[in-house]
Every structure is written in C-alpha cells, then in structure tokens.
Image (cartoon, rainbow, N blue to C red):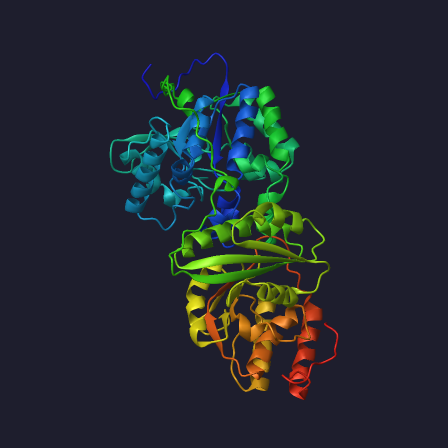
Length: 565
C-alpha cells in the first residue's frame, strides 16, 4: 500500500488522539486580558502538566499526535524530546499562539517555516502536520490548506465543524482529502469529531466541550460513532485542561472565566474512561507512514531552568545610579510569583544603568504573603523585606519603604503590576527637576487597558475636583506608580494611611512648594487576586479629604485629627 493512504483492513479499530501543546496563559480565552509582554512573568506549568500527561498516556498505552508551538520548542526544546521519547508524533501549531485571521499568505508561510525549523532543531524529526493555534478554520479560511499543500505538509487538523459550519459540505465532518484550489495537490484533513444534536453539530471528542457539556450525552455520541462510522474519531485536548490547580486570572469576563476554568478536574477522568474503552493512535500511524527514528545515542534530557537557578546578580556600570524600589503588599500571595519575574526582568533591563535596591513591605497580611516574600526575596542581593505587625494601609507601607530606603531616589509601584514596572526607566530621569514623578494614565497622552468604567469615572472625577481646589491641574492623583526624592517626602506627616494617603501625599508635597511632574502611561487591570479598595468607603474618604483641603484643615501647618476612613 502506498504511503499516506490509510489501510481499509485494520484488524482493531483505532481512533486518533491529538494534544495541542500550550501553556495555560497562551489560550484564546485570555486574549484581551493577558498580553504577550506578560508571558515571561507567568510561572510556566507546561513541563509539570506534560510530565503528568505523558505518564497518563504511557500507563494506558496510548500514543498520539502533539501539536507544539514553535516558541515552546525554541525556548524549551527538552519538552519536544520528552514527547518524542514517549513514542508520540510531533506536529506544528505555528510559532506563536495567534489566529490565522488577518494573516496574509506570506505571513503564514513564514510562520510555518519558522515553527518547523524550531521543532526539527529540537529533535522532532520531519514535521508533516499542522493545527491552527487559535481560531478553527471556517469556509473562508480554507486558503490556509492550499498554503499547507504548497509548503509540503501532509495533513492538517484545524477544522471543528460545529453548529452549521460546512453544512453544505458534509464530507468535512470526517477525515477526508482537501484538494488544492488550483494545483493538482491534496492534503489530508482531520477535523474534530462532531455529532448532530437538535439540528446543530456539537464537538463530542474533547476540549472545552468535554468540560462544559453533560458527559452522558457525549459518551453516547462517541459510542454511536465508534459502532457505526468507519472513520476514526479525532479526540483533542490541551495539557492545562488536566491542571485544576492553575492560577486564576481575575480580570476575565464571566464568559471566558467559565470557558477556561469550569470543570478542569473533569477532563482527566473523561479521557481515562475513553482510554479504557477505545484504542488510539497518532495521525502518522493512521496514515501508515514510517515512524520517526530517534537517534540511538543522545545527550541526556536538558532540564528546564527554574527561577531558583537564575542569578539575580546585577552588573551595573561603575557610575550606575543607586535607586530603591519600594513595593507595598497586603494579602497578595497570588501576585508574588508574577511580580518576582517582573522584577527579574526589570533588573536585567536596567541593571547597567541603575543599581536597584528592593524594599518590600508586607502591610500586616493575613494570608501567606509574608512567607512567599521571604521564600522568594530574602536571599536576593540588595533586597530588604519588612513587615508591619498590623495592616496600616498602602500609603503607610509606601512611606515605610521610603524611610527605609538606602538611596535618595525611591520608586514605588503596585505589587499587582497594574503599571508596568519598566515604565520607571522613563520616569526616573524626570526627577532631576522635580520632587515627585507620578504615572498618569488619565493624562490626555495616557491610556487605560481593561480597567472597569467605574474606576475610570471615580478617578477622573476626583482628579478634576482636587485640581480645582489646588488651582493646579493634575490628571491623576491616585497612582501608586511614582518616583520620589526621599528628602522631600520622608518628613511629610500624613493623616490618611490607606488609599487616600496616596492623593494626600501629592497634595501635601504641593502645599510645601514641591514640584510634581506627571508622566503619561498605561494603567492595566490586575491579573491575580482582588483589589483591596472598598468602593463606597473610598468615595466617602475622598469626599472627606476634599472637604479637608477646601476648609484648610489639610495644610502644611495643621494636621487634621480625623481618623483614617
């Protein structure tokens, strides 16, 4: 029988298992909340999930096709080796996790070639298959299959013919050959398996559908297909779908939160049930193509470098400016892993220009924040971890950081990285002619990203009111992302220790004749955990502060006796 033509006399019926290899933060459900610049700040869970998955497949004697992103093969080639050593086929899912919509054919060609080179350099063997990393192909996207033909791919698995997609071309529901629109070429297509239900087709063989739809319905649909259809079922899922302990991104819409997190624990037992009932193979095996030969002698598997193995040593220039970065924490254990990587990136980026000291202040947290801070940062050079015995508020924590800073220039940021720490590179030089530089997303040249409308309305309204009382226009009074001159700040005696203290700090500095500069920047929503701001309480507090400014009770010479709101 010719290679690439599946046999019609297979003694034992086998279905096809496919795995789309991506980390949990690469997914389409996070698009709009997680940007590509954030990826390096996330703790990768891919290796642990792959090890778990490969063990599960080996235990059940299952082999499949793994569609791997080129960016993963490029940065973690040892994962490709692990998959191939398990007897599985390696195929391409493009280089970056992006959809093909909006791509030009030449852009797709470049992406395909780059991905193939990365996979084959990592030890995949010849790459002959492809799956789009995002956006299942629709009828208008079938030009992609023509490009795959021209690039020498043997098969694709990017169709999910759900609902009424391809209702006028039902051959797309099963494994079939796609003929090039112009040339005498074909490519095998392995669509995700679907079944008709109330006039619409639903996916029955994996992914989000397994987690969201009743298992009884899908189980019967799979059994019916197995008994009545000669074509194999094409199953699929992602390694993160068996990881119920993954971090929770809080800035998602309700729809995307359900889409990504609901029933994560269900995927494993559903597939374990399928593995016990049915036989599985890779697409390469189905096409009866020769297995990729692995080298007999190879170097030991490389281990993924963990954060604990990364050196924090800075190599600043002899004349590098010393700068302190003060960061307040209150019940922020979920954010510390992400912040750790953001600060690592910042030190690498600015290490030749600034000698960065870290002053981290736990403001009386009641969760595991203190233990996380000590574990991550206590052994890091030029770092001090301080603790308030009880919660005093974000402004008090920043002032503690400023007063304990070993440098005259002190920066502060929110620990949730709602302001990108890298913006400090542009803000620090502005302190040369100022006592405070404050990030200003509400400036006409500033921006906000994925921030609730109520927060925008509140902050902008307050800024207008404060500006009128002070007779000087500032667009943002409530930003914690700032650069201070320590000598101008440490003697200020604040009334309010919490969120109001951030605005009060700017007001008192101006009342004493200090110079404040705004720097337009972008404010993003937090990714992990919940904001500690109590909306109604904060509004009441700002109204009180406005009255204190208006009545003269908040002045350089008079300290109000009001309790913090």
